[in-house]
Amino acid sequence: EPEVTQTPSHQVTQMGQEVILRCVPISNHLYFYWYRQILGQKVEFLVSFYNNEISEKSEIFDDQFSVERPDGSNFTLKIRSTKLEDSAMYFCASSEALRGSQPQHFGDGTRLSIL
Amino acid sequence: LAKTTQPISMDSYEGQEVNITCSHNNIATNDYITWYQQFPSQGPRFIIQGYKTKVTNEVASLFIPADRKSSTLSLPRVSLSDTAVYYCLVGSTGGNTPLVFGKGTRLSVIA
Image (cartoon, rainbow over all chains, first blue to last red; front, side, top):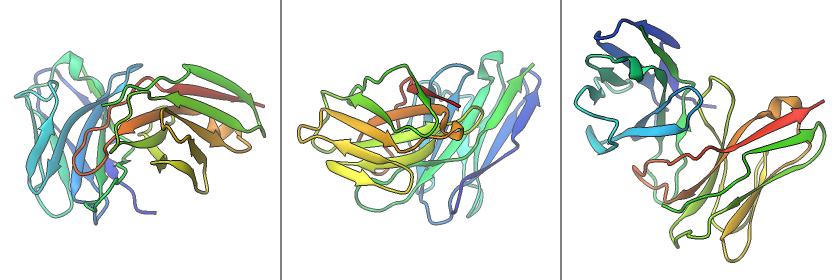
């Protein structure tokens, strides 16, 4: 079964450094998303992306965050200057662009630890 | 987005059928009901989705009454590996619609 893959599985970064999290969505999917989950808390939406542009973003997704689809397969989340509170699991998801309700499929996440 | 209410936790013995009910009184006409499963340190995994009546796949069944104000996820003959958090989500999932996760139901399966 096709799946969303994310790398790295664990990233440790010093506060203030830039970090890039990578995702390879399912190949025929056209909608892409990032979510995060702080330890012990809910899964929170960050941003959705379609047709090479951001469709929607949450309040969490401030100027320190950016997303990019640099080629036909990768989808990246960049945090420009990390803060301690950015420590969380970051999940990428993708869904098909068909009419009707299409479920989002998630990767297993990148655990980001900010020191 | 329709607010959902589900039990915080449930316990079950191996081999039993588990039913997790979710209330969504404010469900809209275009809303679907979707259930996800999450194991520790893993991403949410899509289980099943439905609009009305009953949906069944190889993993679970989803029962939705005519008024659609609630739904029940049924897991047949659970095993220890079904121990996870189960989320009920209600909304339009077409296009770029963000998913809104609640706290879910923590299911513990006991040997």
